[in-house]
Image (cartoon, rainbow, N blue to C red; front, side):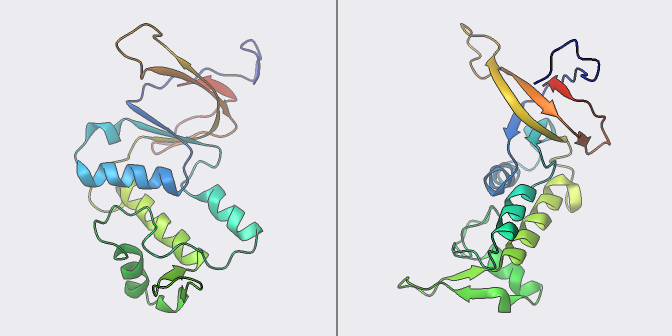
Length: 189
């Protein structure tokens, strides 16, 4: 982290009801479930997603590519979509997009589970993230997605009835909000 008097540093203060640190499949699953359970939630409109990549599943997909992973070992029902039935959303996505050939039987299990190709899973996650950003129904997750790394998390009120209020220090290389927000090198939100 840079010192507060560093001329390259700029202060960024964002109030958010929910800050999600990281934007991998688990973060996407959390936000998709919140959107499913309460589509008009004000919480989603005031959510800040913090991740150095600035986009959902970017680092996750890059790691899979760098390791040469062609297919996931997880069955198709292990995905971030908030569907209520096992194996419906990702398998349905593959069928709807003519990509059933990208599902491969998982060896060593008694059931006939299938694992998706890495690219199929990545595309599925990209479409789900687009839906959350307002791609289809509304702008449920129209808040910020900040390209930053959380460097410190400090409780604001140690002896308060609000133990969930925090100040999060960020190391920001690039910052992008859905409204085209600015940039800087360090800040807090």
